[in-house]
Image (cartoon, rainbow over all chains, first blue to last red):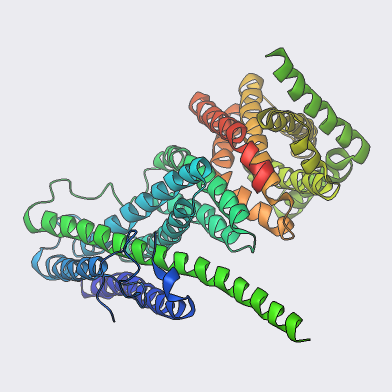
Length: 45
Length: 255
Length: 225
């Protein structure tokens, strides 16, 4: 039974970790880009 | 970081935001984090092990939201693709592309979770059972979308190509489902969903619903940010081009 | 309506004439397909039952690879010679161009499949019972392959990476066709029990869906993609 827990941890870790890493990279990219883009152009839609 | 609401035709006097955040997304993000924490609480601690699945149901608490989100994402891409071909506005193109990328992410996670679940239950990481097989095929189809999207081209060409693939791919989804279900469903083999106890009661149901809700909120949050990043990327490319043209002009004047 | 059909016929004839002159399907791809049959026989044991049982799958995998090759070669030829642009400017209805191309592809693929069927019958010692079922499966599958192939072929035609991109795009999309056609053939060759009609139904749905989609999408495809 305790064996299953390793996989549960792995599944939750991979999912939350994967989404978390993606989100972090996304936010970082957003900050980097908004520095390059002139302020007037930063409004989105 | 400046504190602004999501601008929609605001007066230009409001300060320009840094990064892709806004009050709306901060609220959404906070709600998402709370929901994820609650899901973890119910999913990992409070809810009991399943009568049939045992502790492995806790993986299913992740599996159902990610697969649902993936399908929603691909439907959004399909609708955006159709709308782009009709309206030809940048909004629909960027929305479709952003949603597709998220769909691929969540689909990949779905397959990973399915494999981990399989390892605990069947002892193997892969079985040719309907859900996993379908997900794998559809993942490949949508990776094709991203591959074409990455090819450098002018905005309209890239958007048209993406829209075409977005529609071609979505039509395939129900067909792949049917084909794989009939094919592997015949083999009374191991399937992921059929062993779920439909009488999921009490805290198990709570965990499931919390997980679904959390997944949806996280998806919306990600989609907004991804869209904004895409928008900024387009603006950066435009201004980069203008900057280069300006440079050439300056060089031409001084030579 | 008659005018529309005439447009389709025009493109169909043009494409078949191109085929006769360049001999892509017959001259280049067909030898490849027959070679693949031999390769499978070398890889699997021809004396046991394996080859006979695997025949439907091997047949359709070979057809899929051959279809990708035909698409790559014909669309490359057309894109490089500016034919796609000429078609765009020709005033022909894009949906008619699409249907004409699909028809030509269907003809080429059916010829290929017929030869492969003979090859399989001879080399793998397979007897074809249930011919009606087999023909219907082949027809519906082929139309589906041609329709989706024409869309992706035209889309990737003008890209430098078209040779690697087309299979990556098309083959996953054709996974349900491969599954259904193989099951249909298994039933037709009496390896499996059950009616093949549901598989033919699914193949027809695929074919109709992509015919409709292609007819609608070919205009933006030719103009902008």
